[in-house]
Length: 388
Ligand SMILES: Cc1cc2nc3c(=O)[nH]c(=O)nc-3n(C[C@H](O)[C@H](O)[C@H](O)COP(=O)(O)OP(=O)(O)OC[C@H]3O[C@@H](n4cnc5c(N)ncnc54)[C@H](O)[C@@H]3O)c2cc1C
Image (tube, rainbow, N blue to C red; front, top):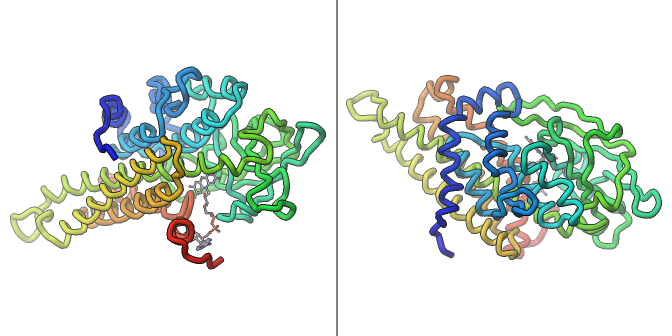
């Protein structure tokens, strides 16, 4: 694998540094505390053509791949700006429509979404099925040729309040009636303005601009034309959005970990206690920082490997899961080691180090929890038996 980035890729990576001059961590935190979309930043990213990173230029995008999307996210997160709406909107929804949409779907949805005029959320999780996607019960019930009535419930749907459309993972055949458990899935593009769509806010303990919602679908009319990748064939394309989700979130973790470590190094080089030597010289602090730095850079490499595997059209599950695991764990360790350097100051609003922790800790649990990532690696990569 060639580790040299092209000039264009380096520019994409450095974009985060440029944006952060205008919209920095403090700006992001102001919105995070209010749980509101950082609209000026979102507009800037749209105007600069980055929302449609993975969408071909013919549909208003930048015509880049997963690696560039990850570089873009990593560059922003290096500056302490983790923009989750890029995950559900740009990567999971626009990227998937660009790859698997019909010509009509691409023309209808992509140009306005790339321009930031419309937004998507992505809805797979259900309260009862939880991590076991196979058992989701949201059902598109056939209502005559090519027509369905969608009913069911989703939970923890990021940005559902600001989304114009939801990409909803549903079944058109219940899991109890299919031959293979992966049969009968359909991904519907649902208009959030339909009167059968209801949303309820889930109050969260996370300082993030993005809010989380329960969604209820009550006999929402959808048609074959709204199905992405074909009716009953949703599972075949599902991992073209779930693997990118893992990759981009790992990129976000790598950037955030680096941001925390950068802040810690700056502080530990200046703060002096007990002697005239900066606390950064104490190996009790220095070694955990060095370990975390190593883990972060390892996770970064795994993220690039997963992204480039995906971009080459090769099976990307193995590296995407490893990247997600490595990124989340490395970022948690990096923030923890950094926090220790700051002593009491680490917990203050002024220094803002503890504020980084909730987002990286979230990534151990969601979107795919650490245990299921390890199950995948144990079973699918290493050939160990399944326990559940
Ligand atoms: C902030 C946030 C944003 C989110 N955004 C979205 C979104 O936009 N769209 C969306 O669809 N979903 C979203 N989710 C949902 C998220 O993907 C789920 O919360 C996650 O997949 C875990 O599912 P669960 O909460 O039902 O946990 P459960 O499935 O109930 O699992 C609970 C715990 O049990 C353990 N566990 C479960 N099964 C196994 C097993 N087989 N082996 C070992 N351990 C196991 C794991 O430790 C897991 O953490 C979001 C969640 C959060 C918190």
